[in-house]
Image: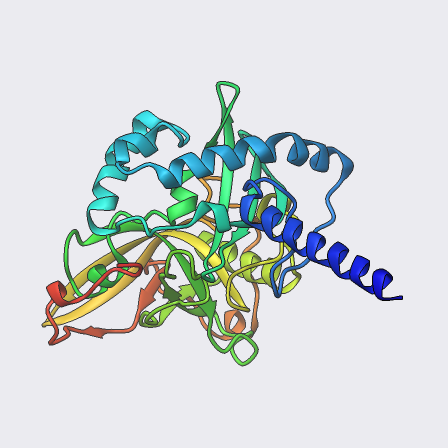
Length: 331
């Protein structure tokens, strides 16, 4: 009986040793255990075949990118490297890439984004330190490359500095948007929303809330946003991506052009254009809208003044804090 017990102990020790060694040495592309809160994704047979074929290669590309020390080194692993090089160099001057232990990365979920220019492989990866990365890979010249704009949520200017009045008065941003008082304002002629710039690797750390933006529902921008929020509430993602959302509940991803103006010492913000309702490197909006004007109760009683902009924000008082004291999320 004693020999049998000793034998079982030896077997259990061996299993634990092998499991620990696999956990430590498992490459990025291995189907390692799901981290807490993940959702098992069921893909079509065709998508699953592409994922199985591409994931190991994508994992190698991401590992090499994260280990690279300079923008010049990283540039060889991203899509459209020639046009990305200058943006990448400027971006990392104020947004140094956080250290990520690639040996500790866990593949949480994988799916295919059916983009207009071709299918992209999208991976959700978690680290032991609690970081969560959402990485899309595009195939160029028979090689899988990182969609860098999507990966870092590239914006032309750090969002907090822009809000503080620093830099150019107009910029393009990849942000998260939240609809305010959606139920209470469902019959209003405008959508009320606020914007956030999430911290890299920690998507639930949204940072400071922007002033309120009011977007007319009967404009292209209003229709896109309305369709995107409806898509989010239905649990769907742009381009048929079969992945659980890692955004805070109720928030959508947007790529927008925003203008900042100052009059009588007061700062105003205006959404000039909603480029897309996602962060991928494509101008396709990611949602479908109709050409018919949106109808609601206010349309029956009010008329919109001609020439009004699609979106206006509330007045933003000029802050006492100087722009130099603000930091971009992730710094």
